[in-house]
Image (cartoon, rainbow, N blue to C red; front, side):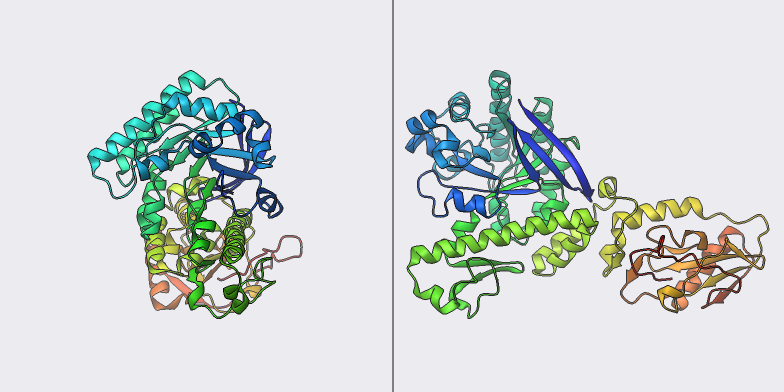
Length: 497
């Protein structure tokens, strides 16, 4: 297989990187719009002009409707698109309509013949809801076909994608993912999320992704099947999904469903178009409802694509800026079920510390109790535990409170008039003043933060355990403290003492 995955930027489990497949490149995270082999309303040229460099289509429909033409021309000439093509095996059609009468070899040979860059092996999606017995059958069937395909066709230029099945049965998801990695797959695809998302089971979606993610090496990219809901895109990226496919842009449009960053609206209940994309800017709500149904569907589909792509790009920018957690939290306020998913997401802060930079250029925001589980806070708390050591003199100490604007913070050499200096962080508690300019001690902004009586009481308790006899409190930098702020080394973020 001609395949490579390079990670360039990370935050949480999210990665900005590149996938190289058969000489073509995709920047990740990325969305691959699903196109219909026969009835595609938004042309591939239009998709290309919108910025999409990869598409997905269904090999079974090609087999049943355009096989001869596809084999003769190849998939790129057939659809007039020179980017990356990913082809599905037809497993979703099998879920809907039953056995398709094709073997794993039939599916693999077709995908090779038409020249797909990335191809899914024949699978049986678990779906929802499914009893454990049926879930086990679909997982084992999919894994068995994947291993057979890799053994027989794995030396071709097409990159085979291993479909992870098991649905809500997380032990089966883990078993599937580990089995696929062991079989030599370099990219996996998590199946059966569509119905979970349609039922707003976002917490279960988090658990499914985490079960797969924690079962595969960091170097293996993860694709999420059918991830076409704007609310879940930043969350899925933060959990480590690198690529997505979706036909939701057109399926929603056919039902007059209009995507926004805060959810999905119905055209019938709207009076305005709250968007400035190329589709919305040239019409009004009244005009949109009066035009031909086919043309309206296309305009709404184009709009939906822009929203989905915008969410992916927002997640990428958040990774680079080190604020992916903030983006996920902001989006979680759009729906109670998504907020529940954020609570579950926050429980994996310790696991996500691996991909989170130790130092960031942006200040750290604390807006809820869940933010105390951020990997930045977890890591800083661990390092602080090692740094809290009493001086040999056991002299008196001073604990400055948080009053005063950030620009008035000063740093001493650690002592003032024979006293050790400490400060109070809203989440980390008391810390040596020498850490003032170490992230995130004074680069944290907290809603309602303050040293208050409880904070000072806790600080005194910690310091007594370190062996200090007493502690005095000051709200101003002590005399003799020297400023460390300068244009060269000033922190780019606000400070809070």
